[in-house]
Each structure stands twice: as C-alpha cells, then as structure tokens.
Image 1 (tube, rainbow over the protein chains, first blue to last red):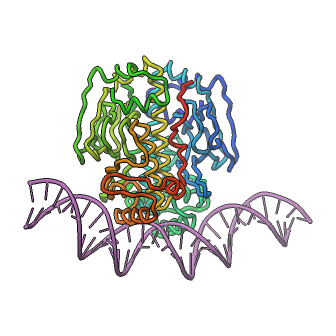
Image 2 (image 1 turned 90 degrees about the vertical axis):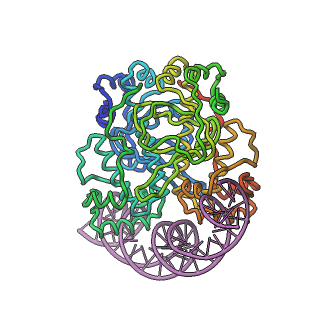
Image 3 (image 1 turned 45 degrees about the vertical axis):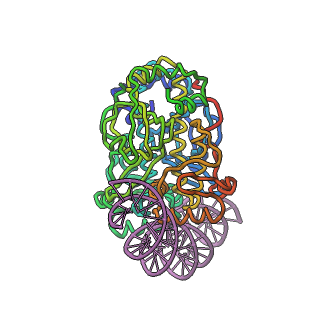
Length: 241
Length: 241
DNA sequence: CGCCCCGTTGAGGAGAGTCAATGGCTGTGG
DNA sequence: CCACAGCCATTGACTCTCCTCAACGGGGCG
C-alpha cells in the first residue's frame, strides 16, 4: 500500500491499511517514469486509476499555438483521475517532473472495492473534494493575484500539501520545478517568474539554493499572498451521510 | 422533474424521467432567489444538493482586500455541489445573477437514490466530469489567453452549455452578466472588459444590444479564442465500468 | 425630476511579455 | 582531464497589455 496515499486518506477517515490492500493487491503494477516523460497522453483512453507514490508530476493542457497551462501539480498521494472512472478520454496530459512512481488500479476493481467498503469510498470522495477545491483556488490565484503573490501562494500551498502526504516538512522542502514550469503553472513568463523570485529573495521571504526551498518568513508570505488555507480542507473529518 | 437537468443528464446516459422522480418527489422544495441575492453563503454548512432549474448564478470566492473571483457560472441544469455530499462547509459563495429557481434534495435521499439506480449514478458522475473539466478550462483561459480571447472563449462556452441544457440556442442568446461580473470571471477590470467588448464589436465578431448577445462571426471568435470544444465532453456516452 | 446603477471613454502608470545576451552547471566525448 | 554542448537562470532594454482614477452619459425607477 502506497504510504503517501494512506497518509492522506487516513487523515480524514477512520481507515486501516487493510482497507486499501484489496485495491492494489490484484495487479500491483508499479510503473516508473523518468523526468520529462509523458505519463498520460492527451486524448488517450483511460482504463486505470493512478496514484502517485513517489515524485512530482504535472497535469497540463496545450493551446494550438504551443503555449502550455499547467492545471495542477500532482504530489505523492494524489490520484489521477477519480472522475475518469467513467469511460472517457484524457482531456489533459500528465508529465513527470521528477522520477515518478505510480501504482495503477483497473477501474472495475477500483469501483468494486469502493462498493464493498463505505469508509474507503468516503475517504476517496473526500480526496476528490480537496482536489476540486484546489482547482478553484488555482482559478482565484490566476484571476486575482499579482505575479509575486501567485508565487508566494503556490509555495504555501505546496508546503501544506506535502505535509498532508506525510513527508517531514517544515519550512524547508525540495521543489523540483523549473522557472518555466512555474511560469506555465502561474500564467506568467519564465522571465517574469525569475524577476519575481528575485524580489521574494530580496525581501527576505524565501531562499532557494538549487533545489531546497526555504520559507524564511512564512507570515510575510501569507500576508503578501492573502493565503487562507481553508480551501485545502486540511482539518475536519469526512462523513458521507 | 426539472427539464434542464433531465436534458443534460439524458444526453449522455439512457435515462427516463421516472429515474429522476424519486430524487425530488420527497421534498420538492422549489426555492426562488431574486437577482443579487445570496443563494449560499461562504462557510455555510451544506445539507442539501441544489439544482438550478431556471436562471443564472455565479460561484465566487472573495479575497481579504475585497477583490472577487468568480469561479464558474451555473446555468439551468447545473448542480451545486455534488462533491459536498460529504459533510463540509461551502468554501465559496453562490449568488443569483437573474431570478433563480433551485430545487433541493437532502443529501441522504440523494445518495439513497444513487445507490438504488446505477444509470442515475452514472449520469451524475458524468455531470461531475464535465464540471471539473470546465474548471480546468477556466484555468487555461485565465492563465494563457488575452483579455479579448477570454471573452470570445467564454461566449462560445456559454453557447454550448446553454444548448446542453435544452434551450433553443443558435447564435443569439440572452447573457445577463454585467461588465463587472465578466471582469470578475475573467480576471480583468470592468474597464478593460468594456474596451475589449468594443474591440469585438468593431471587428464584427459580436453584437450585444442590451441583453441579447449575438455571435455574428462564430468562426472568427473560435479562431481568436483558440476554442476547442472537446473539454465540454458534449459528445460521447457515459458508461461506468 | 432626480437619483443610482451601469457602461463608455480618456489619460497616465504599473505590471508583465518579448527579445536577446550572459554565465553557471552538468553531462559527454575526445 | 579538458573542451564543448545544452539546459537553465538571470539581467537589461523595450514594448504592450491591462489597471487605476476620473469624467461623462444613458436608462430605469421612485
């Protein structure tokens, strides 16, 4: 059983590891994708549900003129794509940011396990609520925040989400994203991302030497970004009525 | 049974009206909200699932400094909020754009009906897939399109979505949104929305006299907006495997 | 008639994009 | 072991989209 997934699901529902075992026992096909590799092609038929066990991945859409918008980052414990349980085609691609290890479950087996276990269904439903809320917050970030605030806000979100997947995360953690990925995520150009990062550094809000990002002044970042973590639904306990 | 809801659900699943009757028969409490009224307050506990029967509503989030980002428009047939079946609080508000009539179903009754009817569950699942895909496209619109293109893209989306709810919609339909609402949807200022509309009018792409919007040159709009309707999942048939 | 809401238009300024040059780091092959 | 290529980040200069403040005008409604 993937630990990050268990950590996330168990945080909001009463769950033991055995609840999850049935899901992946049948065909525990761990797949590894190298950095830069395509995990799911746009337009591909979806027959499996994926869970990220290790590493980061991005979900993106492309425009005809070649521009790219990254819709969301997938961290350990995130699922792709609960809603694709219906037979449909991927309307966005998934690419590995680092080396990524995924576990796949066939849709029918997944649904069967959910039918037989109400607590498990509740836990996954809760994960879907969180996921959609994160999408909504991404909309607010793009629509109503400045470049600097977008960066600050994203960093704070990543910190909380990493903590939810059970990593020992304080104010220092590895962020394997390039400037261009940040740009495609935040609706900016990579040049402007670079400038905005320089500003955040100069203001003493962050340091970022190579890979490890440090939130030097979390409160300052939260003020700049108007960060309100409520949308992450980190507290609270799931209950399907 | 609300007709717009039936039109949308039946478009992608084999469904008869009787499938839906059980949902609303028990407590068919139609509620009307006047233009500008709050339908759901941010932070309110959610005990019901809502369906818009008539009129338009907006889902929005507010920032501390008073700025507003509209996450999505709700048209007849749209549900608020399938994912709130879990006991949680609204992380965004809903406000009536026109006079809005909603039908509410208690969460437990709703879930019971879904459990007893696989076709119904499939149809609602499909609606959720569409809804999330529309959110993703909103992200692309905000992140990677110019002001003019955002407007053109939104108008084309509204046309298709209205058609899905069963309205007789050609290239002319009523858009009850103010400039400021468009601005809060598209991440712009109302002044810039006004200017961009002037441009679209001057280019012969649209006319908008008072309420009725006419897409005078749909192909031109689609080119400007790089509109690819695939994300609306308008074709295709739902099947839960 | 007068108020208020909404839309338009103008002027000036700030934020973000584009093009381009530079420099560091890494991996590779002679 | 070093030279070179390729990728990535930074910085500069210039441009353009979009924002803010402000004035004005039209339509609905009391």
